[in-house]
Image (cartoon, rainbow, N blue to C red; front, side):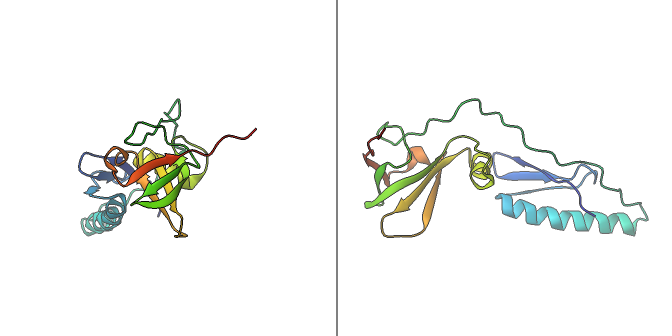
Length: 157
């Protein structure tokens, strides 16, 4: 059986519960750990119910789309106060890099929207000599001394 699980951000990590399994809940420092803990909690919960001869409830909760609450895009800034924009040339750990994406609003792209829901947005950086990207979340940006604005690509029209 598949049960809906609700995850909530807390001050210390995440919590989760299954609406159809009364009293079945858990916490974790990360979303992945909370999901792992929840699977274990659900299995233990169902085993306990069976050992007591209690009926296992049928899933009735329905997962629905998430509802957007951001009315306007977030404005993300470098420590210097300059607004972060896609295409900005930057120094990241003193190495040339470029801002590949600014994740500051919901786009309908599941990957980027996941960053909005989990981290509240952020910036995707691509270093000049590295094919991989680095994500810096919104909360960490003000403390990121290793990201320095260099220049902005001029707009062409």
